[in-house]
Amino acid sequence: MKVYIIAGEPSGDILAARLMIALRKQYANIQFCGIGGESMAEQGFQSLFDIKDLSVMGFLEVVPRLPVILRHMKEVLADIEKQQPNVIVSVDSWGFVSSVLSKLKKRKIATPKIHYVAPQVWAWKKGRAKKAAKLMNHLMTLLPYEPQYFEKHGLATTFVGHPVIENTADLPSNLETLRQQFGIPENARVLCVLSGSRHNEIKKLSPIFIEVVKRLQQQIPNLYLLIPSVIAMKGEVEKIFADINIPHKIVVGQQQRYAAFCLSEFALAASGTVSLELAACGTPHIIAYKFNYLTNKMIARLATTKYANLINIIADQPIIPEFVLHNCCADLIYPVAIDFLQNPAKRTEQAESAKIILQQLKPQDAMPSEMAAKVVSSYLE
Image 1 (tube, rainbow, N blue to C red):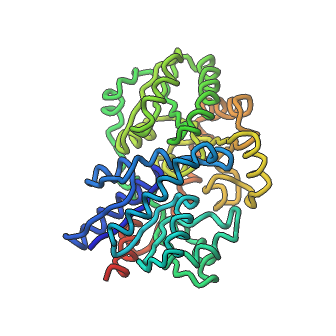
Image 2: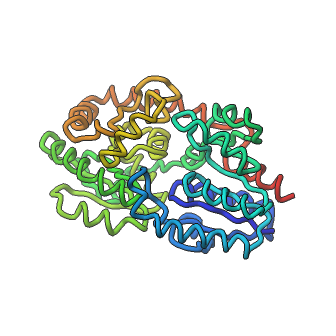
């Protein structure tokens, strides 16, 4: 029994790894092939190529990478025909995945196709729901209100729950021991800095966050930075933060990542799933994100939601301060960051409000990976 997985970015890699674990509990002889990242590699998965080549966001940002992306697309298509899997599970990375699924349809490859993580049609490009219905057999969503957008086009859709519920189910409790292991001075105030997991994100957000923390240090001289990174980007992150005159530690791996969240009073984070992870760990934070100037303009015109952050979208109020597109700058971020660091009540209020919203992302019957495995197994059987 063989499952072909297409997970083209770090967040999808974590989802797919948990799905692999859940499926192995059901099928001792199951095999996995395709593309994935470091979390899947920890489960013995051998990726067809390094997924960092696909991990890029934006419109114009994709253009320089197109030759590499198109080459990898051909490799995936050829590999699927070679492997002859029982089912294909694609995870997030809608731009790449939708192109692969379109080409599979043209080649009349009838293998059942399941996609994990719905394209955000409620935020922009609503036409993707109709397109998705033509390309796949089943869709698994992270959010409870997403199925309605796809079911009206005849696509079987299941809300399986958000992985942040599962990923943060067993958080570290021995914080003093962890603090000593990380080498954090006793009187230090810890700030978590997360510039993203993609090269473009790190390149654009790190200088802004560094400028913010330099200003913060003028008011908080005992500041200490914890900087989580993925293994593939660790070297790049080390170079970027090498010259800042602020004590810091770069950590990798999911266990150390969540430890860093729990040890931090506050966090500066790239917009994305990390915001939910921080909220689940009870860590107050702000989110920021930007592309190049033209992409910023295009997204500002296309977006149909009031907020960028998922917690804010569900709550319909700005629980998590957002600094996105043209508002992503140190001059706007710093006053809010220092206000949170100087106001414990404000930090507590955000953490409690965010955790209430997170409860809506939890499925009733099982953990998200178990729910996802049930859907996949229904096609395997």
